Image (cartoon, rainbow, N blue to C red; front, side, top):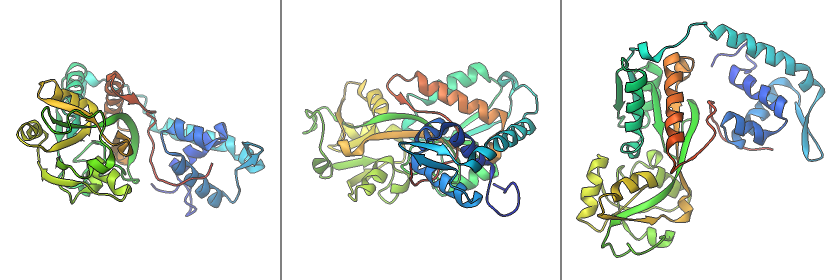
Length: 327
């Protein structure tokens, strides 16, 4: 994003973070309000201190309080942001019923059976003239260029580390479980420990060479361990058929697993505790951040996420991430 003035680096995103920090006097509460991690807000505060040449917030016992300069610029920042928001507000109302631009979305495959049909239902009801494409991107590295060029409007992802140069909003979280055929030797277990998990033969929708876009292999890589992917498939629709005829196990989100288990042919077993949760989020480019159609679609996604009772929803503020810490 271009600087507001000179080469000091004070851009609009940092000003919005500063505005909330001055109101809340707390890194953790600011992170919650903006939907970012505490390390991300801490890194932004560090950058703001460098740019403005002042601590801005200092410790007073267990609290943070603004410095004199922090108090002095607080009102200035708020007024600047109000003026910028006024420029962006065209005053035109957006009516999804008459929106006819083609919208292209990349969504993680394991959302297919329980999430994407509800999106399709709402789009057909509320924006019946909008053509919608759920498309696939073969390489994670292509996502930025596709979003930048406008060939892609939005991404619903679940890999461990989303790109920090894209807009980001948390969407939902779910448990991670294993799916296996009913007569699998481990089908009677309540949970499988990590040591046993690593000895199993796994079926995966992504090759073992792509941990960057695998929510499972990415988490395992952070634990410095690796599972044995005995077989990979390109289509999620093949997973049930493969599990039915083999002793392979499949690791996925609980809602997707429960959809498979409805057939009565499969057992669900809790994954190792070390795998924690699977997080889903939306990503989009700065170029489409203020697009009325993109804004409407992002709100629609949050509505769908909140309807899914199996998920614990997370704050949905729309921001740009980073990582690091302080407060």
